[in-house]
Length: 122
Length: 230
Image 1: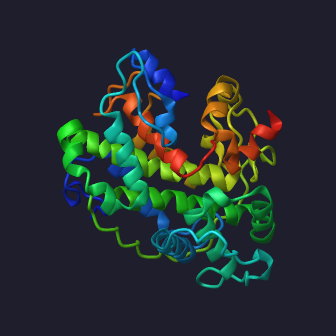
Image 2: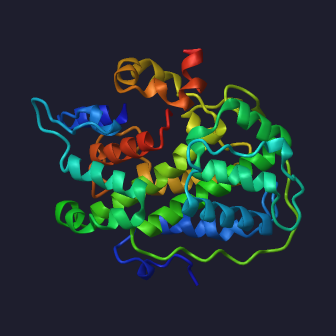
């Protein structure tokens, strides 16, 4: 939801299938800058830090050292947040639940095991 | 001497991130609410090992929790080690049945604080690894008794664990570990420093080198790779 809304705020068009491993396409409008590289960085970081560091050169050229640090920080902190959510079984916040019905269905997010904490009560 | 000095990184790192790491490391070896300093460091050590090992292959059955030794001596029990492994390397496989059993066997305080230690240290190790910095050695243990105590206003609810319910306003993730307020505060300080600053409700960010959509794209892909519904 935050990806879509923050993209809207900058008049950028984002294809959410990129977040679940699909192509990062822009449709009719400008997409998120360097979206393909950023998705590739997140995927490499999920495999291993060594794999992610192979992209450092491209990242530095595209988004600079500050962007590289931001991407690393985002990967790192969300690895903490997902474990917090999974281990405690927190349900999706109600306002997010209501506003993401179509996206969750289209992206198959309701198939994730953690959805049982939220979808059953929806 | 700072554990996470600026010059230990090859790129400039926001001072708030370094401060949150420092705060976490400072608290790691100290007596916690439900675990001693030695036990908290043992949890962090086990978590670091579990990150290296990764998840068990599909088809390899995890041990039955109730069969495991649950006596925590100066270190942590086999039960605690198994919970650390699951939370660290297999969190997407956690179910309500498994979590309920773990919490019944360990008690909610120990379970929540164990999760807190994992989710405070995993991001630091990942961040260091991504920036080609060595893992930080764990801090020295500071002797002392656990503090104990259940915070006011917590109760069971929609999550596996008891959490703040009285007058709560905010996203659920921010109160997920509110049963152990000190560690939860450290965690949210880390989240603020590494993610939203104080601008969560602003859709256009100016405090990062990346734009907010760029950050949310990385965040969303990371969450999906971890099969995290939340």
